[in-house]
Image (cartoon, each protein chain N blue to C red):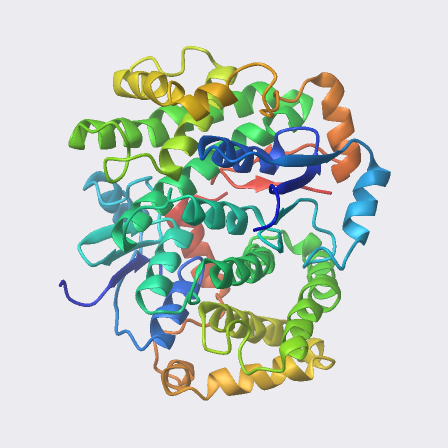
Length: 240
Length: 223
């Protein structure tokens, strides 16, 4: 088997963070080649022999493949490391849970790129969605079966993704889990899993949220010319 | 096992159409319950049928499945259209996620303000001929097989052919320089279940009319 998986991305969370989480939770060591400038980014995407679609901005080298597309990578890893359920029904539940979480995490991910005048509005929208559409579903799931994990009474991709998104939401508003006692317990429990606990320590490959300084870098690398904004269906619209 | 899958959506393509294509191509009969008014959608929500308050929703095998990709993954896995192992699945996933980007652009085109539409269409056409179609033409050329992955029919072929029909609707000349894709489209279209789905009177939906678009905007409360 080839060496460690190698991640190609910019030095920030973005679409690669969920992949880092999954690898770390599975106890898989990985390397990263991180770019900081537009030029480095161009060098990556112009290596077309490496990447499937021209203009990709992320890639994972693993098991002799150059994988692009976040979902393709996540599903491969989840299946490989036995985090995708034991049968087709469990896979279905995991997929439903992670797809919804992606909607929420995308909103949070793009929030720092809001047009200045729309920041407050977007934040309110995100928190409203989190606490009325998404978190109640996961709280109920845990309450209904009384188990420690979302699906199949064992750790899966869904649990890892939920923890990641809870932490992102708490960065937006620390008290966001008020009213969700089972999610609070869940957060504590999953954070204690040794591989995840390690990933949550300073010095791990986990990336910090975008700060003012890195926002400009990101805008430049990915050429976001205008701000991001949330439309009423929760769809992110990017103009770049 | 429960009866036929039951699809809950409005009477149009939207995000349900790729699910209709996949079921039909797998030879699976399905029922549809159309949402006609905002009240219909409210009822679905209030009766607790929509896990995240959203459609598409498909009742299948005792589950009320939501999230388009979750539904498609389940159908593809169940009907053996998802490759023979995780590496083939990874390849299929890469191809179809790329297709989903293009499909999404075409889908939201109908919501584009009229004054921006022409520019948007030009943008899409350029992406079709410069970014997406060349990739798939190249894949077919590289292995010379009849299907995109694993030398047998998979969801990648079905999603691609669906997309090629939309490309053709946008502008037939876009397919001019992609002979292998044209051949794939013909080949897949001749498979008996697909051929049946392409006939008039099937559950395949036409492009959305202005009237139905207004109706959909009301149902989904899109401004």
